[in-house]
Structure formats: structure tokens, C-alpha cells
Length: 100
View: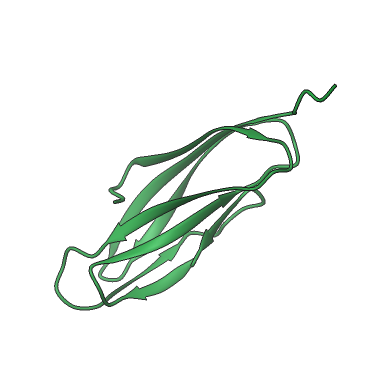
């Protein structure tokens, strides 16, 4: 369940391999609400990137993939209907597999 400031840490990820984690957005107010993620980038994709939540929660897949060796950390905004904005930080350490 995401609160503002939460971190999704992918740990070590092999270069060129897509990893996926699931986060849960919880609707704590009565009625229907909607959310939309800030623009994605070349490394991170949210699925769905926007949706209407008519139940109490929504599962969102967070995909990470990098073609370069790097230490990744970026904060994305989640815009929620009603003026709320949450932030989520995505972290990953991309490594090159040592194949011999």
C-alpha cells in the first residue's frame, strides 16, 4: 500500500532484463477515485499508468529495465483525483552479468 515517500527497490537487476514488482494503491475515501502516474521514462513503466478505482484498492505493475550499467533512483508523482499527490521512489542497481 503506497503512502507518499514510499520506495520500490528492485535491488540488483541484470542489464537488459526486465523486472516487475506490484504496488497497491488504496482508496481510503468513500466513492470512486482516479489516479495517474507522472510521465514514465526510458527505464520505468507503470501498468496501468492511469485508472479509476471503484473498489478499495488497485494493483499497479512497476516494470524496470535498463540497457546500461547504472545506479538508478528517481521519484515519480502519482496524481490522485481531489488534488492529492503522492510520491514514489524507484531504485535499482543495474549490473552486467559475469558470464564466462
